[in-house]
Image 1 (cartoon, one colour):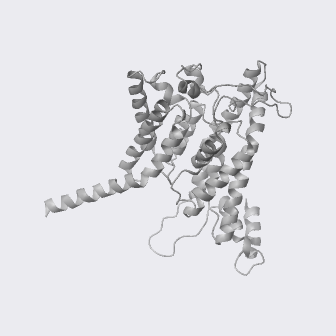
Image 2 (cartoon, one colour):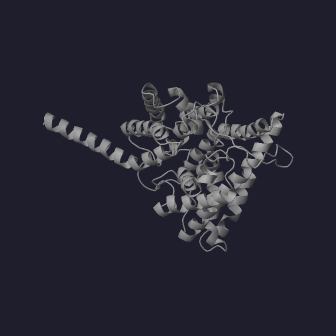
Length: 385
């Protein structure tokens, strides 16, 4: 590592003011701060130096996402071999999923980071690190059948109109990954829903099976939307061996990621818990009134409910910031996700719209919480005076 550090120090003057590569300074700064913690501190006031900066936080979130991503790759192969009725080894199944998902991840990062690099160069600013997480989440919340060109368009839309025009990382109102998914859902619904997009139908480099073009497979949420009881067992839903978006099927893998986020203090347990509690209560109410054909707990373990609660509702940029507001924010998301699922069959996955609505309401929630605290303190001062 010292050799790399010395090399960066050697070439750094070329990227500073007056250097021959000064126009690429933001690019160099982006790579340098990704590899090493910046040693700069504020020049005034009281300062606390912490080795964990925002890039390290983003890297930890990516690590927490890996269990769900790796399982999703295996599940793609598993669904393909199961649909074909053939036998395959663990490696065969995983490699098929890996080869199917890798291009989606590459397109997501190449388009997203390319726009961020270009935007930083144009504005003369530092390259921001927020897309490190969004870039891997976007492919994970899409069906395996979503084409690469559609992903590229959605990423470009989400990064430009959902992030950069608001000022970049930390200033966006809506979750960038969900905005990309929403763009795809409403612009290219045939690529995001139905019964033909959830299973890999082509073999890749000899891995997997080629399925008929007309092959269809419904997700548990799709079956619920049609008023049917899902064919998948509860165990299948928890382990994740069901059709669905790439990284959203395994409750166990998502739980591992949740433990990492909570243990490191990156995600709010209040937001996470309130999503699950309010979603469970609402699902129980619909079950008791006969409006939902499934047990209340099935709503929690299928679709993107767990993934959304753990990785997207807890996004520190777009969620509520106040401690009381986190409870309210999470409760709105959990309840609304189930309401959309049950009451509107046209949107069987209600988590996306619920979180986007929560993002929109988060500033208002925080405002009223803060204002309420101010009023309480003023009242207390008047009583004491």
